[in-house]
Each structure stands twice: as structure tokens, then as C-alpha cells.
Image 1 (cartoon, helix red, strand yellow):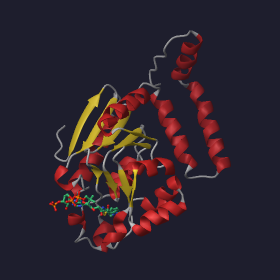
Image 2 (cartoon, helix red, strand yellow; image 1 turned 30 degrees about the vertical axis):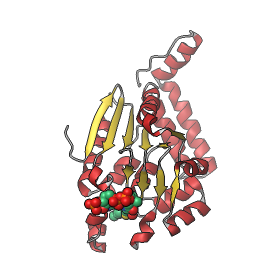
Image 3 (cartoon, rainbow, N blue to C red; image 1 turned 60 degrees about the vertical axis):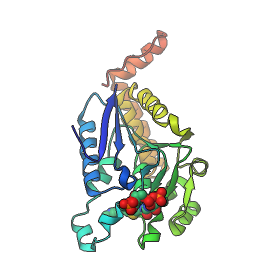
Image 4 (cartoon, rainbow, N blue to C red; image 1 turned 120 degrees about the vertical axis):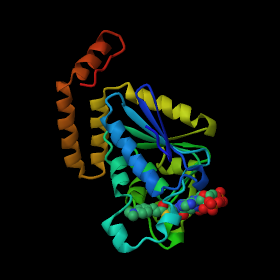
Length: 258
Ligand code: DAK
């Protein structure tokens, strides 16, 4: 499939989506968001895909929504035909593991898309921020909700109220990114990580992700009950039999994703 604002490829069971609007630092225009939703739907349905990586260029993961497009927006337009809703849903409800590989700017909607992924691996030059306040608006794709959950209220407030950017080291200290790698190694490292995830049992990886995400949406007691039921249900999987048999027999497991 050919896209104009994305490069899409696969390596083994990993799908790689590269945002590709270099002239606008990968600003999220309507076409890009539409194409992103489409490719994620394809990867969702493709049984040969076990993990997805979203990345940008060395200079920018994404510098936010396309301000030139957004500028003329009206309340009723955004309310009636929210141009981004489909994409936000496509990323945040993607049920297979999805990793953001961030190099350069991840600002506004760019930072928000990265946060919708399961985790972020950052290059040393990554810069995260929610600068919407400088444009006379506030974050509108989860920035005021996800950021405080990930980095705490004080830092989220400071970032959203001042619009300042934080570098990769600060983002790692704050818990926004899982780890930092050299810029030139980013894709290789993230693809390696994605491949190791894609090698696991896909239903188990999906259930693990669902269970961790539940932690952000429920009480501890309910979350623990949810986890226990899902854990118990995994004993119906062939992959549980295979994984434990392989351990006992001292061999590598071969999961069949069922
Ligand atoms: N939109 C459009 N074009 C952008 C852009 C953006 N967000 N960011 C950069 N560009 C373009 C620049 O205009 C420039 O193009 P030309 O003018 O040369 O044609 C080109 O990319 C290179 O940018 P710069 O010349 O500015 O590059 P610098 O290295 O000097 O600066 C920068 C890099 C990232 C610091 C700077 O470009 C910058 O501040 N960009 C804007 C960052 C920003 O404010 N992001 C937040 C955008 S608002 C919604 C929910 C959420 C949202 C929207 C709707 N709904 C629920 C409906 C999200 C909103 C946002 O993300």
C-alpha cells in the first residue's frame, strides 16, 4: 500500500510506520492522520504482525497538529467532524503492542500520539513538550490527562502551563520514556525490542497490555481482580502449555498465538 505522508514497511512480524512530512517536521495534517488510522487498521487485521513501531525523522517525531490547517478551525467543525478522533482512537485502542521511537521534537499532538503508544524509546536528542498554550489553546488529545499520569502533576502542570520542552534525560527521569539510546541507533534498537515482543505469544502480549492499561482506569482492587481472571484464562491457551513445556524441556518455545 502506498501512502503519501507515511512510509510503511514490515520486518518479520514487526510493522514499521515512519511519519514522513519532512517539510513540516511531520506536523499531523488531516491526510497524515487519515493514513495513520488506515495503516493501523491494516496492521490490526494482519495476523502476521505482532508489534508495531511508530517513528519520525531524526529531527522530528512530530511537531504537533498542523497549525496551518488547524488555524481556521471552528468549534462546531471540530465538534461535528473532529478530524483527529479516528486517529487518536486508532492509536490508543490498537490492541497489539505499539512502540513510539522518538527522535527530535515530539510536541503537542506529537507528544500525545507518542503517549498513546505502549511505551516510548527516545533518542538522545528527543524533546517533548505541550506548547499549545503558546498558540492560545491547551492540549486536546490527552496531554492534560496522560501526561500527569506518567510524569506527575507538578511537571505536567509546568510543561502545559509554560509550554517549555523537556529533553530526553529529563523525560527518562520523569518516567515518560522507558530508555534513551544514541540517535543513530534508535531504529535498530527499537526494531530489536519490537521483534522480541513480536516473538512472544500475541494473545498473551495483548492481554498483558490490556491489563497494564486497566491499571490507569480502575481501582487497585478491581485491577487486581481483572489481572487474576485474565491470568487464569491464559491456562486455556496452547501457548501457555508450549511456554511451560519448553522451559521444562530446556528449549526455545514456539508460540502459535492461540
Ligand atoms: N504545524 C505546521 N507546520 C509546522 C509545525 C506545525 N505544528 N511545526 C513546524 N512546522 C513547519 C514550519 O512552519 C516550517 O515550515 P515553513 O514555514 O518553512 O514552510 C517547517 O515546519 C520547519 O519548522 P521551523 O522553521 O519552525 O523549524 P525550527 O527548527 O526553527 O523549529 C520547532 C522547530 C518544532 C521548535 C517549531 O517548528 C515549532 O515550534 N513548531 C510548532 C510546535 C507546536 O506548537 N506544536 C503544537 C501544535 S498544536 C485536536 C486535538 C489535539 C490537537 C489538535 C486538535 N482535536 C481534539 C480536534 C493538537 C494540537 C497541536 O499539536
